Length: 424
View 1 (cartoon, rainbow, N blue to C red):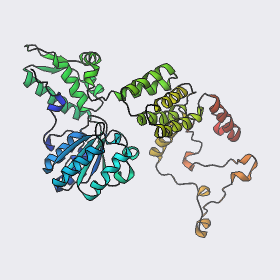
View 2 (tube, rainbow, N blue to C red; view 1 turned 90 degrees about the vertical axis):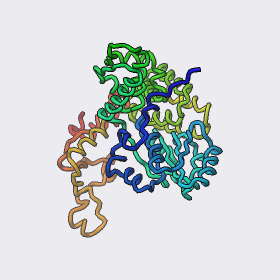
View 3 (tube, rainbow, N blue to C red; view 1 turned 90 degrees about the horizontal axis):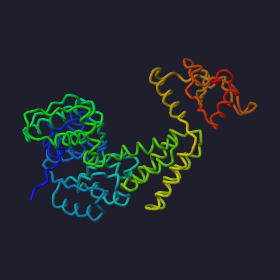
View 4 (cartoon, rainbow, N blue to C red; view 1 turned 120 degrees about the vertical axis):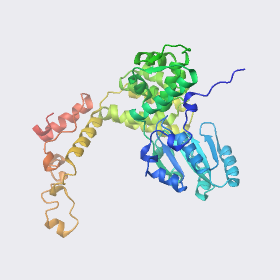
């Protein structure tokens, strides 16, 4: 009977904080979390970041560094009963750490079950999530935890991971590896150390002992991953690729492709709220004022999921997906806020024109605050052409109406009101 070998990413998981790669803003010399570890007093915390950036490893290293009991639960397979069992053990083992992976998948009642133990200090909670905890972790629990954001690994950090993996494989398999090109490895890893090591393991898994070195090229990487996509994506991170295909299909007004990728997510066990949130974002970013009802329907979809649950919720997702796919598209709001933000970054905090300032005191009025402001509703058509931008930005245009019926109407209205200023 052969024993299945652990994945390379698991074999190379750091055993000491000094071996940990990445997140220097948290664990580097003098960094906030490093100081907490060195003081041996750590708060309950939420580690928020994309897959493969070291959330689980960091939790384990904290426990090991502090010599504290360490309990692990997965929010996918654990319930309130499992949480209470850990609490019972923790009461006999002071200073225990409870690590909950994918804590965003815990329901409100499951998260509620954590509150008492966290507040009383029975356990120190470390939750890991790929989703924004502001939306996925209940406020009472979030207020009792510090939130630390983990970043995708940089190219230099991924190179460290790659070199570590190459060295281990060369020693364990007795082969020579030459990394001729690493662009494909970097690009497909997306800052994810686990993906990097999965790819390396796949590429080298079929290599037999030979005097000829194994050369890793971009072509070899891409072909190997395409042929072994399920193995490459062991942790299920491919859902990011599928949601990307889903969004692009809706954006591209292809209802059949959109409903196919939705079905892939439904069958793959994707979190329905994850899909619904993306539909809300898509309705604003890609449809916007071409059809304002799209955002209303997407929000209704999100709310309805909470009311009716699963599996019926898939029908609501399907209806919304098809509606958005069939809707006219415009990204004018997305472009407008981006352009305006870029201007703010370049020009800084320009002063608000005096006539637009609030004048609650006599002194402010004497200084000219609010002077010459004209109240639009006092004029015909509820409009009077005055300047609303800072002096340095007069005439700047951030919003360009899209080429759809609704925004063409907006274009004509602005042109009729402002004349050449907004003639577009």
